[in-house]
Every structure is written in structure tokens, then in C-alpha cells.
Amino acid sequence: MDSFVDEGSIVDIYDFKYRNEATLDYDIEDKLSNIKAKTSVTCSSDEHYFTPEFDIYPLKDKIENLRIDVFDAEEFVYNDDYSMFVDLFREFLEEFKKIN
Image 1 (cartoon, one colour):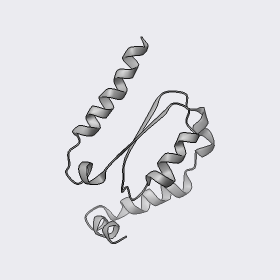
Image 2 (tube, one colour):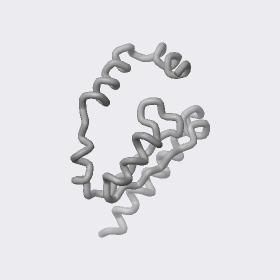
Image 3 (cartoon, one colour):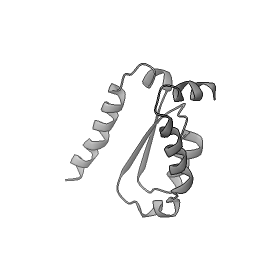
Image 4 (tube, rainbow, N blue to C red):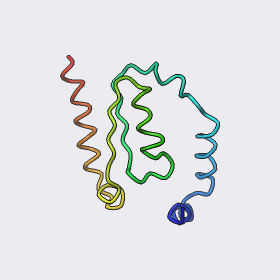
């Protein structure tokens, strides 16, 4: 929680308020099974707002064609090296070329 507070001190104070309101007031869980397209969800292993174990992995049971990738936070977020994400995203998009 300390790192969460530290992070909050350098961002807009209303960001925290709006993120919390969005997660509390906007629930579309019952509509997730309607998603039929291939879907990719990517997150960091130490995400503060949407943790993999409570928010990302449960999506697997609700979205039919879901691909989940969890990056190790130390390798991804803290080094500001987004090339791993770009490579992963390109790989995901390449799957659509194979369909045609």
C-alpha cells in the first residue's frame, strides 16, 4: 500500500477517485460471455488496480477466446521497456492474418 500512496503523490489526485468509481459503479460482468472475438488481456504481475489473480484470471471463464499474458513487473514496468508488449501485440495481430 505504501508504494500505492507514493505513486498517487505524483499523479492527478482525481485519477484515484475516478478509477475507484469506475470499478465500483460500472459492472458488465454479465455481458462478458457475449464477447466472441479473439481477445488479448495483458497486465503486470504487480498491478495495483486490477490484480491478475482477482481480476484478470477470472476473465478466462467468462470470455471464450481469451489470451492472457502477465508480465513480470520488474522486467516490464520498472524498466520502461515496452518492446515485450509490442512483440506480443504484433504476435496477437498476426493470428488474424492467418484466418484469411
